[in-house]
Length: 248
Image (tube, rainbow, N blue to C red; front, side):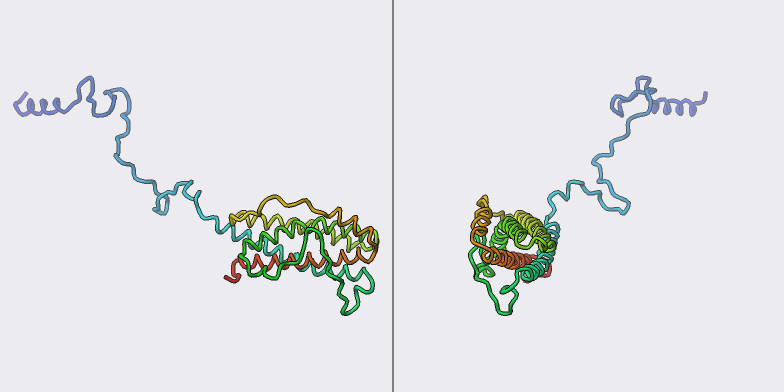
């Protein structure tokens, strides 16, 4: 062996790992299989196909609920608008089945007080919108039992007026749904209605009206149908203050 070959062999021998293996990788020994992957230091955030960082799936958990609230307000406003049209039709048909003097021009029945329900106050429009919606929700909650009373009275006075009876039944169900939707909007605004509502006095109203005679029963129905129209139209106007595109 020449002196050059001996020097080369020593250099290669110095570079070969020992039989026990070097500890360049944690716990890996020569002949024990593939070494573990090298640590690349601080991992870089994964990127999607577009080169943008992958988002945490929980990153949107604190996103603003505003779009959902706007959709809820818009849906409830549309329902109130629809019920306003139905209430106008209900009042017209009610008058048609009551005979004179209800259908005569210029006739205005007395605005008798109705238990659990009154007309919107003159200053209603000047209140803050959440307070107006609270009053709307209270009135809408009082209407279904009163509409049921009117339907029962009309069932005795006009048993063949099936469309009128059906509309009264539908009105009670629809105004209950509108009231629940208004309550949901109030909850989303953080302005829930205040405390439990009193028990409706519809049963007492029905008993008192039945004993008073036919004309008071007709007047009661006219009054309830009129209040139904006033409150659903008022609710429509109040929700319009919050609906997208409504007045500021």
